Structure formats: C-alpha cells, structure tokens
Length: 391
Image 1 (cartoon, helix red, strand yellow):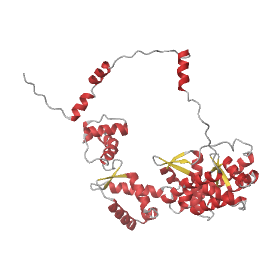
Image 2 (image 1 turned 135 degrees about the vertical axis):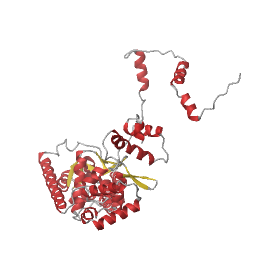
Image 3 (image 1 turned 180 degrees about the vertical axis):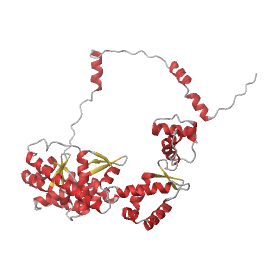
Image 4 (image 1 turned 90 degrees about the horizontal axis):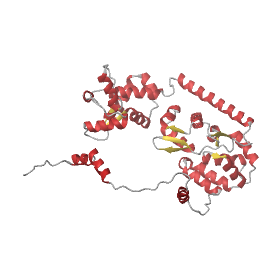
C-alpha cells in the first residue's frame, strides 16, 4: 500500500510542534525526580540558607575627592557641552583659594546644576569656607529642590532674559512636584522655548530616560531639610520666593495671552491644521505639507499670527505627534473625521482599529489578518476583530 502525504509548510510544521497535544506528550515523557522537602526552620533548611549568603568580601572604598566629583558633574551633564565657559570657571574657582565666597558658590552650582548640602559643605570646607558663611550665601542665591541646592534662575542666568528664567523656574517647580516627567508635558508648560533651548535647560538639572522621559538629576535627600539648618525662617523664605515666582510667571502668561498666544495654543492650531490636511483622499509628503502651511499663513492672518513662531524642528515634532510616515507620505495616527462621520458599530471599529493598522503599515508593506490580530492584541489587548471591521 502506498500512502501519499502532502508536504507540510514550515508554518504548519511549527504549529504541529507547538500544538497542545505535542506539549503534553513532551511533559509526560519527562522523567520524574525524587525531591527531599524540609519545612521552614528545620536544621537542613538553615544549612541551605547559610550557603546562600555571600562570604567575606574585601572592604570597598567609595570616597571621591572634591576635584574628581566636580569633574564628574561637569563632564556628565550639560554645562560642559552647552556652557564650557561656566565649566572652566568652576574648575578655576576650585583651584583658586582667593575667589570670593559668593562667586565660588555660584560658579560651582552653575557648573553642577544641583548639589547635595553635605557635598557642597565638604567642598566648601576643603576650600577654606565656613559652613555658616556658605549657608548664608545659599539662603540668598539658591533654592531647594527635592532636598538639593540649585541656583535661583535670576542668579543662574545673569543676562536677565526673563523667558529663560521663567522657563527654568517652571521646570524646577515641575520637578519639585514629581521626579520624572514626559518631555511633551514639559514642552507644553514652557511652550515659548524652542526644542533646543528646552533640551539645554533640562540637561542642567535632569537626566534623560527612555521613552522621552526626564528624571531629576539627583536622588531625593532629606539630610538638610531634616536637620537643624532648615528652620521655619528658611522654609518661610523659600515659600515666599516661590510664591513671587509663580505670580511673575502667571503675569507673563497673561501678557502672552493678551497678545493672542495662550499656552500651547500654537501647538493646537498647528495640530488642527495638519489633521485637516491629512483628512484627504491624497496624502501629502513633508514638503507638500510645508507648502500648504505657507499658503495658509498667506491666506489667513489669524492662522499666521498663531503659528509664525513654529520653526521647522517644532513643526516636525508636531507633525510626528499627529501623523506617521507610510511610503513617503504622512497618514493620520487617529481615524480622520471624514471617515468617522457616520454613527454606529462600523464607525466605532474604524476609530478603534485605525491606529493599529497605521502603526502596522508604518513598519511593514504588506499586512495579513493574523498580523492585524497580533498587533491589536499588543496595542489594545483585544484580538477578536469582526470580519466586518476589515472593510
């Protein structure tokens, strides 16, 4: 008797090997092992616990000299890359014992961005500065954020640029509320800054994390706020300072609003314009979208007034927020309004699964139903897609 067997594909072979029956057969074929079980607290258990502990290790020395610590702070953050003059001045201040106390503190804090009290105190003592004198200067020129000292913004930026000073204080207030922030949220709060200036500011006080997150540079420390140096007088002084700064920032925002520029409004106007351009039978590439923007600014004075400060980099960032590049053109990340105009289950499916399809096509040219189901499971936690939803 001759049997003819159809050659199975690689995918079918993989399915067969991973089938439940095969897995059960493999589990049943595994040999049994005899285990000795001892209850907690028994002599045998205690012996095993003792073997899990590490043996004696040589003592580790973690002490770092003042010069090496300053060199680490300067070379690991933004000051060296964005402000080499400040970094060089800080190094010179450390070496020059004749530098006035207030200038020494300003240069060191400006180079480091932020410092713990105990580290700053040890550095000051090493340079012959009395801790009480140091604290007096800090009370006047610096503020506390998450237990660490950093210069007040009008001292850090002596050029008197109120936009930079206000932006830095907004960031300091934000990081005092929470250690980690999404860059997009911070960008909305300091909407008047260009992306480059925002990055330069963040690098002086925070560390970049994956997923466009930024985390406060130092770990939280209460060694100063929990000590004798932090009394009611200093606490009240810092509270009054931040109350004044909040008022100044709000007045600046009101002035901008009076000029027709509310916080984040230019982003909203540009996002709405781009969504309108992408809600079309023909999708546009980057150059075509730029030309459409220029034409709208010529035709619409109100639109021009709101978006005239958006440079190419900010335009690209806003465009990336609302669209994805597929085959060289931009496709909206969410379902366009024209496709969502009809009510009912079909409209709900389009709204729900549009982001899944767009994200999928952005990474591969051809898509099968199995790919859509797998991606929907990853993005939405739901792979049960009705056949009607594919139409």
